[in-house]
Image (cartoon, rainbow, N blue to C red; front, side, top):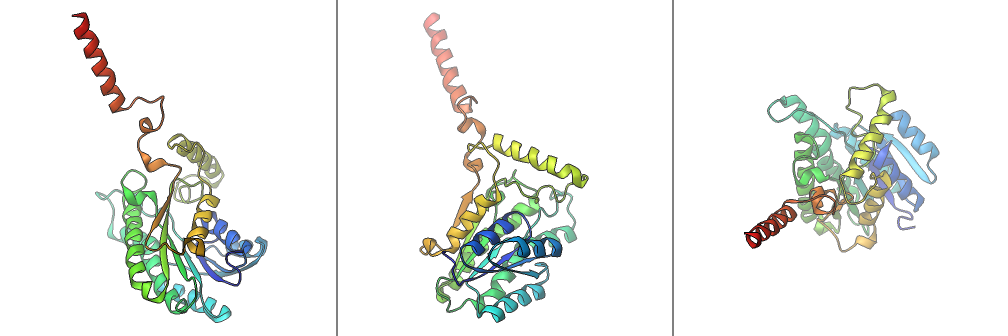
Length: 286
């Protein structure tokens, strides 16, 4: 019961990582204000999740709505102990050579500005709360290209740096700020923007899970609870000596290309060694 009598805000709570985190926080004693633009999904979550879960509709692209969410939670419970900035989507898929300013701005508003404003409007209600903590969702896409569309990657890199800057700004109030960097997690984030029938999206999710399990040392698809567990740790007093840090939870996908961890895949170094042996053998036979 790490969060007994704590007030927790979870954005993007209606599904995926947000729903898993909501269930975990509530199961450990927190009052959870679960917010989302998906009203039906959010109300279902609040109704079916054991514990004290209260759904609040919130569009994180609207700063006024974010402020209203934070003020509402604080008014009902007296303050905010943990903020989990989780809301997001895949965003614009165009390359930098094709993207339009409006699509760029929409993605940045959703993935980066929402995190900044979540922090901004939660902090007044977190000051003086013992163990106050903020956890932001970044991504493995923040560390290099190839994991996501360009705009998403840039926004998530911004979340990482924002986490560090916010940690320094808020140290004076004893508020810790950390980030989690998921790898390929089997949620709706990848299929939501696909131009395919809804009936085909579950099949697409299964294909994505299989693809990711083949691309990383941990040979299974990532699950929402894998990230929720990391978030709960960062939010808890178990991580009380951590701030401005990021936790990579990616099945090892960022360790390197397949040949670096799969003995059946020959990498450049192994190929070079084999070539050296071939040259030596040729010299000996000459």
